Image 1 (cartoon, rainbow, N blue to C red):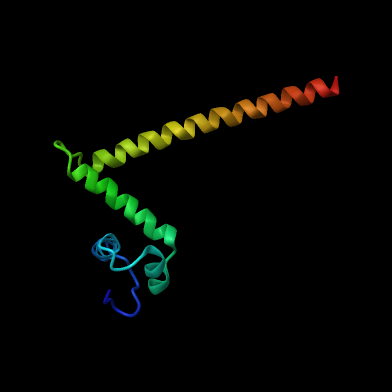
Image 2: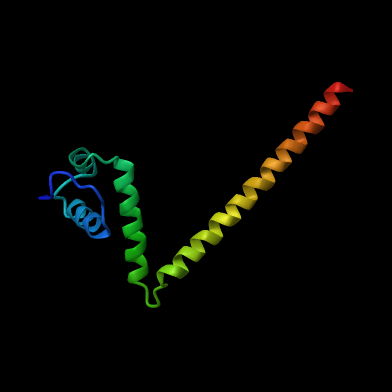
Length: 103
């Protein structure tokens, strides 16, 4: 892949180009990570985002970006709420266990 020696900012166009090279077998995630001083997990996250966008683009009725983000935000809020409930339950249980030990 022929890029500038040092990339300061990874634009969507540059990310897409790198991902295309990986999909075509012209480079690997690990090789690209070394070459551009990125982490493999960062590149893999870009690939997951690209795959999600690709899947949406191929649907008969694709969602717009706002709709996708709203759905993701809703799912994250739900997960956060569940985690908070579990945390409150654990704290309450710990207080109960502590009070029974003192008795």
